[in-house]
Image (cartoon, protein in one colour):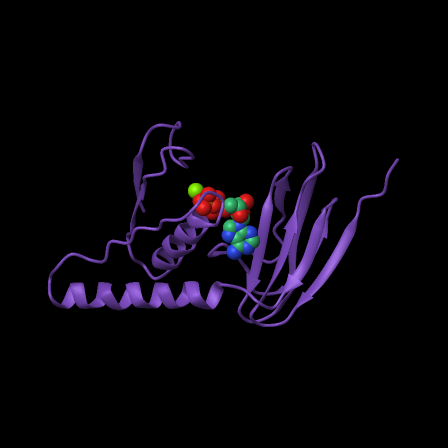
Length: 163
Ligand SMILES: Nc1ncnc2c1ncn2[C@@H]1O[C@H](COP(=O)(O)OP(=O)(O)O)[C@@H](O)[C@H]1O
Ligand SMILES: [Mg+2]
């Protein structure tokens, strides 16, 4: 019997834990032991167990610092100080300002299109911006225009979700 790999990481404020699950039929369980952390804009609940399977590429970010435990085999796992999260937060802040002006002027809120090559993080950025908007009580609409790799329906279609 092989032992389950257990790793614990202490993250400073403004840093992220990145890990990848590559082994076949592997399951990695993540738990926040202390502090606060988020996964692509979704706040993680301390003590809950989050499962990731083969193929997962994950970044757990913390604004305030935290301790994270990983149970299971990861091919890559490291803490990164350089993260794009501050840039993402600035985009969110700019959009929020436009929403506030739109409310004041009774006009339409901002419409943002995210473009770029495949696998660079477009869907992930969109998810972060949607999560931040929802966490502030906004009701963003997500339109998935990627006909090659849609997140809503089958390839070849476009779709939208009203948060
Ligand atoms: N900031 C990030 N840090 C670590 N991994 C990321 C980050 N952004 C995206 N990823 C990972 O990279 C992969 C591709 O991201 P995705 O958003 O699906 O790209 P795209 O929509 O541009 O094709 C996914 O596995 C995702 O989890
Ligand atoms: Mg995508």
